[in-house]
Length: 348
Image (tube, rainbow, N blue to C red; front, top):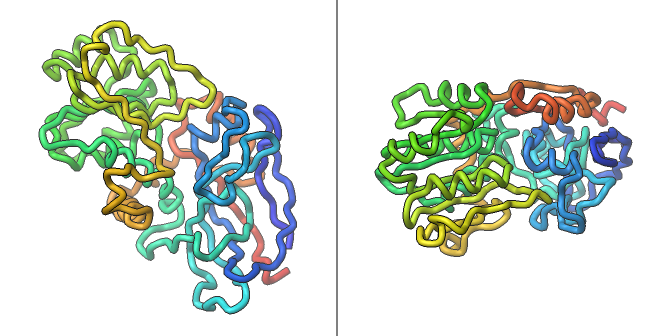
């Protein structure tokens, strides 16, 4: 059958191209995509040609185990239904709603073992947030917040919103989120309308460092850098107290970080922690594996309802407009979805 897939063909160029799919083989399934989420962080680095050459897209996702070079298929948050199965697989999988770490496409074939059944209580659009929620769970694990700590989250894109929402469930002394876009700050405040130790700020507010250092009596115990902007690392360093932790969840691609390490940092004993969802921290791996972490992410999705942050839905054939929006008007968008209206190949 013929499917259509999204290709990054050159900087700021998107093409939807046909892909011939064979029937699913042993252990495989054919999936028809219903919706897929665009990552406004990682995917925009691909779109803008800001990725390190020859780095694998993702060594833990089979469809992304290839060097980052144009033409490139990318994406990792597809939700769809199983239309057909390879030989000798249980037929009750037909029609099952599943999540797949797979690039954007109308249809695709994947190993059945790699597909994640979507819990019955979770609708397809909410399921599109699974990959970013797993990232947020990982960030919380790597930061290991303690009762009564003062926590700062820099950046309120989707990963920042999800991370801050999880942190709001902890018994913290305070939780502060910074983002330059009012819509993102408002989205977090609205989502946490129940009592929580939250306050939000524009990082451009005059004298903000002094205000926050006074408010926290010397700085934050735990800071998350999730802006995608390496300059924000200096804010993280300046606002984190002695012996605090800075969890760096941003991927900067080819953007370089110019850090001010000649001042208070030298004596601060602040720890910089690199956090990335592809692996589990060694100190947790004896008790946690990917399956358990994914279950925690599903549970969090069940309670948080992040589909409230979907601001735009683009038909798949208008995907180029979605990426233009994210680059040219990022203040307008939270989560952008691609939505699909593909015919059922069993009727072709």
